[in-house]
Image 1 (tube, rainbow, N blue to C red):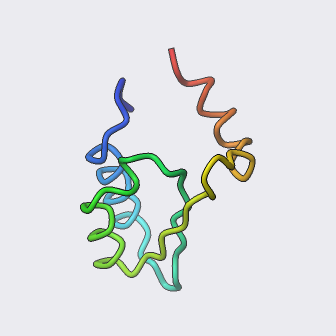
Image 2 (image 1 turned 90 degrees about the horizontal axis):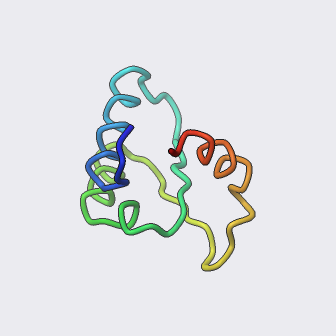
Image 3 (image 1 turned 60 degrees about the horizontal axis):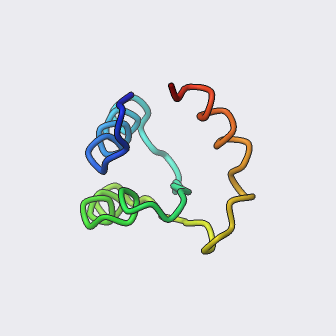
Length: 76
């Protein structure tokens, strides 16, 4: 957790996930269109680990509304 959502934070979480659970099948990583998810470092991570990135359509927040609501409870 961090006070700022940066690419490094997301990458650290993904590295932990990949280290703890080997991927046996294709994996889809769905995110919104935040700059931390569209960063070049994230694209390289996806390529290296054979992860298929997926993003919401522009101005479409409804596909992850439940998750957004949950994470809003963690923010101070």
